[in-house]
Image (cartoon, rainbow, N blue to C red; front, side):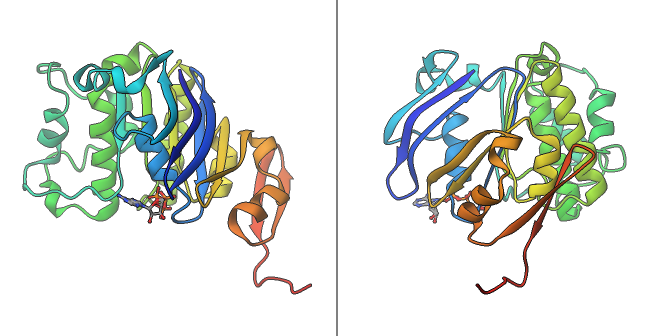
Length: 252
Ligand SMILES: Nc1ncnc2c1ncn2[C@@H]1O[C@H](COP(=O)(O)OP(=O)(O)OP(=O)(O)O)[C@@H](O)[C@H]1O
């Protein structure tokens, strides 16, 4: 679905190669400033690389009309600020333009536990509640494509501010959407959750690609040390990797 060839942005990303296929669930990992958001913006068609190419289904993503892209590519950015005190339900619906009086699907309201939030002004929701509403907005915008299993979901730190139950519920939901044919690319700071839910991962450091591929290819102690500059112990508990940072560092 997406092919990156030697994608670079001066001082931020260097020669990134990546192929994201249909139905894959990618997590982009790395320290603060590693280049995750920059990469997501390029893959969403919202920023142009200075070097290399980003193809979406074989066509440069920059050739897509933004209105056309917005029908099947969802983008959720970090730090969205609400200026108007409209009810959350109305705010989400605004992004579902063209769907008429179509109600929000139960799977979406349940995945993000929206019911108690819909009649409340978005400006008076807690940080995590606002995050759930913003994620719903992004997905509702492309819901027709999601139902057809043809959506591309690009979500920058979707777990930010969510409590552990909402993180698990939402990641399970994304996993199901990928099983239906949709492709998902998110950035994450939670290595254990990423190892559990992603089908593939890319680890960046200082704009450089440290590793990418399946979870077992990327989640090695050596790669994680290169990515984060600290040592990790990785254990396998019933086919789920547990990632433990060695802290405080053991001096050698
Ligand atoms: N608009 C911009 N212009 C120039 N440099 C930028 C811009 N936005 C980010 N940067 C720089 O590019 C680098 C990568 O930033 P980016 O936001 O992609 O990192 P990130 O991995 O998403 O970080 P975080 O985990 O903190 O969200 C950083 O050094 C950052 O300071």
